[in-house]
Amino acid sequence: MEKLLIEGGYPLEGKVNISGAKNSAVALIPATILADSEVTIDNLPKISDVQLLSELLEEIGGKTDLNGDSLTVYPENMFAMPLPNGRVKKLRASYYLMGAMLGKFKKAVIGLPGGCNLGPRPIDQHIKGFEALGARVTNEQGAIYLRADELRGAKIYLDVVSVGATINIMLAAVKAKGRTIIENAAKEPEIIDVATLLTSMGAQIKGAGTNEIRIDGVEHLHGCRHSIIPDRIEAGTYMILAAAMGTQVLVDNVIPAHLESLTAKLREMGVHVETSDEQIYIYNTSNLTSVDIKTLVYPGFPTDLQQPFTALLTKASGTSLVTDTIYSARFKHIDELRRMGANVKVEGSSAIINGGGNRLQGSKVRASDLRAGASLVVAGLMADGITEISGLEHIDRGYELLEQKLLGLGAKVWREKMTSEEVEEVENA
Image (cartoon, rainbow, N blue to C red):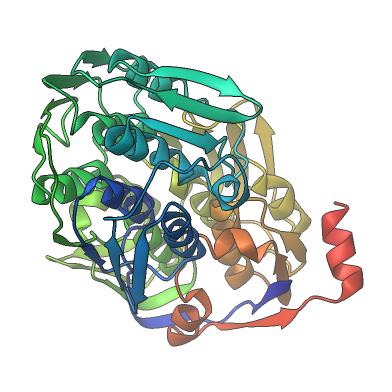
């Protein structure tokens, strides 16, 4: 196991290039199962989730060729092999294999997914959609069994706005007989990205990006080539890093419209932000003032940026309130920030941050999930002394070439192997 070390206090300056969207990639790769011929996905981020999903496609008989940031999938020999254990349990997004394999083979066995532990994230809306399409769904020995004689289009109303359920139902419905209507659908850019891939494969989808998606089923889907949109969460993380320690930072290869809620809050804090077609420029950040944020479904403030933004708020003068309406348990980073001297506490689904006091101090901290790790990176860059972050397997799930990109901006970061004593300490924590 490795740990990330950050010597704080160094100003950030320069340009950082944003990778393809992690939250798109983990849905697009399973979607290739639905094709009858090869599919190539470009602009893939080099993250561990991509590697895991590629290996899962090989397990069900597919052939994959990962070359740089491009993945070519050959689905011709795939079959409905049960995946109750192993790699499938290592990442949350493995649940997209349910919709894709159900749509392709009319059956699937998928182990209950893992990934970041953010409290209860039920898949009841996914199951509701599958059953509406005609599938029988059972939970047997920790795995979800899906079986259908045939899938038929249906009108499905999601009780809660869910990105995962919206995408999973799309995957299952594109080859179903007749029309499927998903009401109260999520609107995230990643949903449009998945719909674009499926449409390029021959699917008939209208309304992606609105709260009603209409799908007319087709019998066959063919191969295509598709380029993933830029990762708005990675871009937002670097915008927050720039606001924390930047003098002049250019965030390149972004879609600024995807980040309007974050941009508005940064400007409200006193951060200078300029946007152009594919770039966001942040400069001369000082004298930050407190703001309140509440996470909401897109286009509201993203829950995935709540944790790194909370770290930034420790530098802002005054008291800030951060409320997470999406994942109430997404405050495991707070204890770690407190280790570094942050004046912050959790009350219910909110964190109260008293910022602008003493600087954070370098400490030994642990990333409990992906975005908590990003929060600790922000804190480490601001802190006096050296911060040691363990739990890097979480960070590596979502941030491509993190150290190289930070070094390119002038940060002082490096990795070291953990001693056996340190590994034991982390495992027993």
